[in-house]
Image 1 (cartoon, protein in one colour):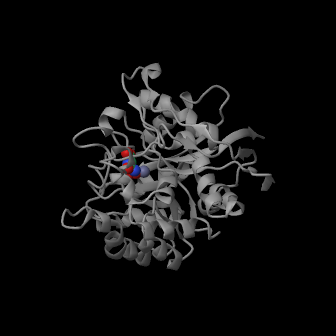
Image 2 (image 1 turned 60 degrees about the vertical axis):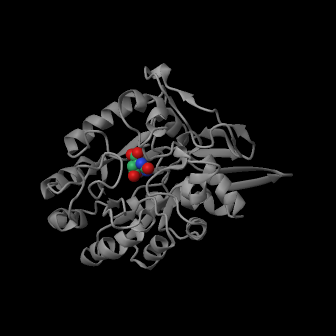
Length: 359
Ligand code: NCD
Ligand code: ZN
């Protein structure tokens, strides 16, 4: 990794990063958002929470073909597919997934936890044979770590999930690879640090940049609403410390989750932030502000492949510290949707831009 400080302007070249947690959606929305991810990231772990969840290897194969077909001309972006765990996922499906070579993980959504999670797991005890197969075959379990009980405060759902469920899964399946996705609390960071090397976590740029005040800055801000919801400043500080620590358990996962403007700006707005348009640039901002740019390459380009047992990318990306304006909205008319997408930092700016991507 090269970092040059030309006076005030920082330029850095790092091994091309991957996004270890992204929502690419399907159909017209897929065509609208995929170019942003494919420009920055060589590979991405693609979440399976489509309206009809991706539950089987056959469905993952079909979805992968649709993603490949939606790539911009000349792109060699590689989607790393995941299966959506249900109470009924069989050990045989896990064996087919491992044999496929394109399914890289299985996603566990507690039923009702977030967008399109109605067919998620009602009780993880029901999945023990499936988890045993994943452990035996080395297929990682990706966890949306929130309990769903209405009686648990929404800001406590991650901590309660870790205590009640995740700790037990990790103890019961000691060789199972587990990723606590989009970790948002100091409790989550502490759990991952103390857990065996089989346990990792992804961190989003928005949870590293914002605390929960962003939800109420001058009024209610639907475009800052995601799940797990933003937390207190002391949690953000713990996430920042984890991301910039060099600990290989922590790696990049944007959780970019596009929803059309009308679905966000509503009486009951959808959870999810669209960050793919600045998917690596925002992390560069975070690491620069923390004085840790030298740790960005490990976090963005090395720790994730090592966890998943894949080689790092061969190409490189160069970023320079030069501000650019983020549009107020991305019009979706060009893909045939009469709506728009409000990107993260809409109407504001991002401090790093891509200078080039090369082999
Ligand atoms: C995600 C989505 O919209 O699919 N939303 C979000 O707020 N992150 C679902 C998820 O990852 O929880
Ligand atoms: Zn997500």
